[in-house]
View 1 (cartoon, rainbow, N blue to C red):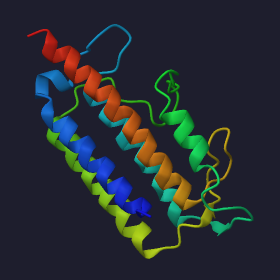
View 2 (view 1 turned 60 degrees about the vertical axis):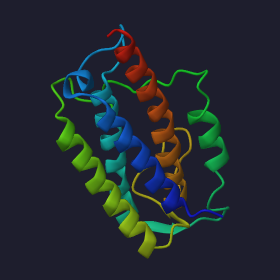
View 3 (view 1 turned 90 degrees about the vertical axis):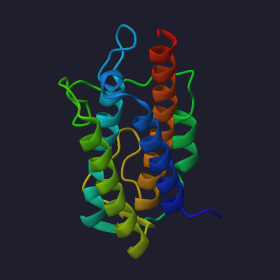
View 4 (view 1 turned 180 degrees about the horizontal axis):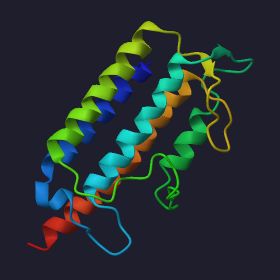
Length: 170
């Protein structure tokens, strides 16, 4: 079985390659009405990875399978027929301003390296008790990593769509 940290590393690699494909102008261009820019999608992901700090907080072993929520998370985030909407008040809502491409990619790389480094040295089967995931409750570090993978995969698909739209107008 492929380790979850490797899957996360792979998702980050695909994400950064996708973001690299955009010109700086394209990164900050709204592709269609009511859409985020590619930069905002990247900023949203960067902010979502910030939740990993709970890995270092209070934990306890779960009285259930450590990966119990993974199938449901995949079913939700990899179902592209449903529209998931981040709340504007949410800490993961992207910035409205100009997003600088190199900083965005560098910050994503830095935080993902920290997540991978911590995760490779610590038990992923423990519940993180400092934050409850909406509708799921407390999740294990493993489930959080799985969420980062499927959430990133979902937004890579969105970035691909944005890229194709922006490049079809040339």
